[in-house]
View 1 (cartoon, one colour):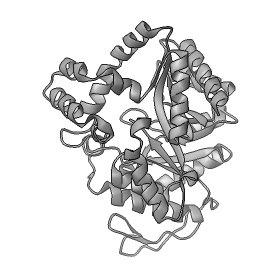
View 2 (cartoon, one colour; view 1 turned 45 degrees about the vertical axis):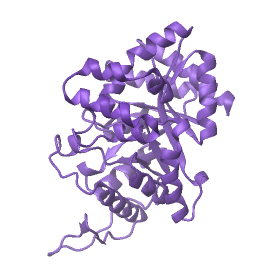
View 3 (cartoon, one colour; view 1 turned 30 degrees about the horizontal axis):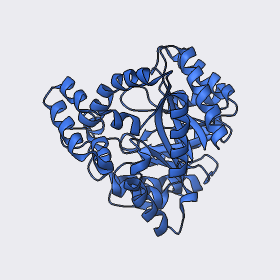
View 4 (cartoon, one colour; view 1 turned 60 degrees about the vertical axis):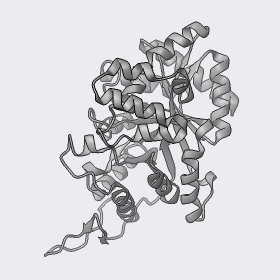
Length: 347
């Protein structure tokens, strides 16, 4: 398995601290650094800066939200970052959700599947160096009128890898069909059929196999000394998971809740969502079980984490995206270094 992490420009303390984290992570042997974009910092700005400060790390947008930019602009951004990084850029795309796309950006969220499919077709057309002419349900390029088709003035670069962050069945199928990699979350290896069934259907339709898709899964990693400390750490994470299941997205649309439901927790996930939406945050967190936290993370004693990583590998994960726990920069880096060494040893 390869190793990766995800950062935001201000995820921990100041940007300078985030930069120090990435530079040290590169020295520790990390393979990929993804830069997140939600409702805080954008992804391309820090990626450009990191491209100038790193030399070996692959750098990826994790993710660029397709509803916030036109496909040609996304292609321009990807090709520029590929040039700046010396070919080390990975384009991660996602549809986000209605709360961010409509609530923050004020653009329609409707038909995200069609938008993703068509956006990738336009992006790859732009990568090819050909004139961009496209007629779809979501994008019409060029618009009717006095305009003519254009090509980007950047050199063609059709080999830029495209990853899709997906959780719903149809978006997973699209990922298997058209993407080079899958950025997943809320992944339980024991329930991985809820994802792979749809990914494999898309892969088969494209005449591809699982080996043609980089399965990149993320989880918090924390090393604790004994079972009591593991239990305390798990308890401290329950409100965060309750927020994902109850507060991420809108009252009607929550992809995280749907993902947990498909992996065996439909009843409790529905109850958590109802409590959270009713304003009972503590009640929602109280419904989260230890198994729900441990199933989707790499939290435990050193032996527990090692065994869990083997389970992830055997389930088909090819890149593990590590979110190291720790109260300080040094603590997070120590955790990350231990995890990287462990992944390398496991293979």
